Length: 271
Length: 286
Image (cartoon, rainbow over all chains, first blue to last red; front, side):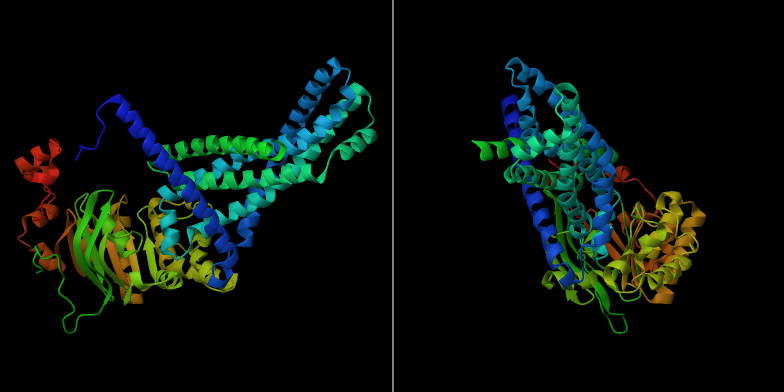
């Protein structure tokens, strides 16, 4: 019975490494399956008499998007102003502070707005999704759905996934607009550049490619946040403590995935 | 009485109602551990079948199989005449609409009101207008004596009320088979007795077949038409209340008289368990 257990420390570590690798691959696989199942129910659900309910999607959009507007606006503004201050400080060394708008236009739209939005949504909604699904699992609510003939992926996964796919890019646009506006106010005070001239420069530097890169990133982040939340929630074991672990794990994994994705997209798009 | 070594229920005889759920040679594993070891049984139309057994006997696993929630290792399972292995996705969903479940903790959705919980299967599976669904939900809540509670959240209900609300949700689609997991667990005797009465009413008034897993002997003897006794993944006996009560099987006697298993433990088996050689010496079927 215990013959296959490793006996020394090295073997144990290798054994753990192997098990965690397999578990990681399994979770990625589960995430992929859930994503495609969500798309399946979105497209074919109505034909099977099990549509993804619009009111469930709207409810999720409210929770994920509308209620997150104040905190995302505040943090996007704070980071953009910080970015403006730092950029002016560095560019002033070279007498090139007038180029600060170029850095802001590209940096905020391509990188910071999607990143801040993604991290905040992961912290607020990704963790809530993991906790909700984990709690439902330990309370046998997911079993109850199955026995009632209600597909849990269609009922629990598809609405937040669709809501995130819609709301995270919207929040990203809002974060970029607020960030650029507040940074513009600071530049107006510090460098005396009028807001009209500032916006003219921003529009001049910005291309469609920069905007689409920001939006593509935010869409990728939204999928990662939703799927990581669901996979961790669905994997909950061990009652309330397990729900806590899954929630923490989902936030850490989602933020890690967002940062790695940001790096990969930057490498692909600029190198 | 059924021969304990065969794990088989002999049915149907003439005049015996047809089965609504049958399992034959059901074997299931959790990981490498074998939980059910070739279980064969059936649930007949309009009867209350109570599944009993000690902790770890496999009764909850058997119930989950009967609800088609678990993947079996081998064996066959027929529900309402259909072999579940032969059903496609849509047929499986259609079958599940004919099953109702009241889980041990109720499993009510905490984000929905009691009324919305009861309405959920109607909302998902029918095209009824909301007003009609609300009326149907209220009717079912009246049956379980929860009329007027439809606007409360599950967190505002007591344990007994949550279980009754779960019954209302389970029967809102008028299922052919209803499953109840430990309906009396954690309730005071009066509330537990009221739930037993409710189960009997559901059988008599609606003609449902009802499968109940319970530890409560009084409750089991009160409601059961037949009792299945499980022991370590094997069926010891499937028979009427009287036959089970009069059984001379030692393990059934121990279960009914609350004799702890450790008092009857074979020393060799105990030693084998301690040394991790359980598979060699212990856990043999009776």
